[in-house]
Image (cartoon, rainbow, N blue to C red; front, side):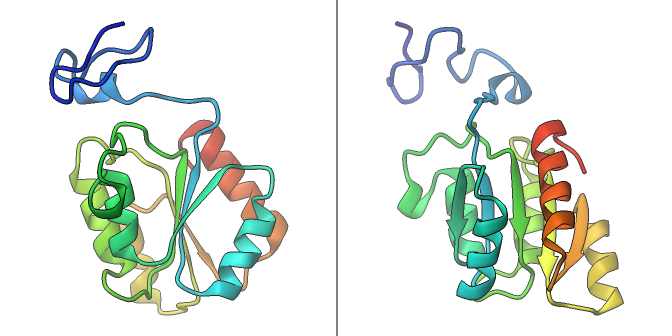
Length: 163
C-alpha cells in the first residue's frame, strides 16, 4: 500500500497521495459522505436531523467547530481535509465565528470552494440574503422551513454538488 509523503499514513487503494496531483484531483468522494450541519440551536438541530434521517450527518455547534472539522484542525486534528462532506447546512447567527465568516473561509480555500452550502437561518433581513449569495451560498432558506422543501434542497445539493 502506498503511503502519503506528508503524513506517512497509508493511502487507500485507488487514491493518490497528497502532493502528487492537484487539489481538485485529491478530493476523495465517498459513497456515504456526511452532510455537515452547522447549527447552535438544539431545537433546530433536532428538526434538521429528523429531516435528514436517511443521511449521514456531522453536527458542528458553532462556526469555529465547523472550520476545524473542514480543515482538520483543533478537535479534528488528523481528519483528512480532503474528505469533504456532500454539503453544508449553515446557520448565520452563531457564537465564536458566524456563518458569513465560515462561508468566506470556505470559498477562499481551494479544497472547499466548490462545497455546496445551504444557508438555513431565521434572519429575514434582505441584506443577509444578498450577502449570503454574494459570498457564494448555493441556496438560502429561512426558518421555519417546510420540511419537504428542506429535504428537497439538501437532497439535490448532496446528489449533484449544487443547488
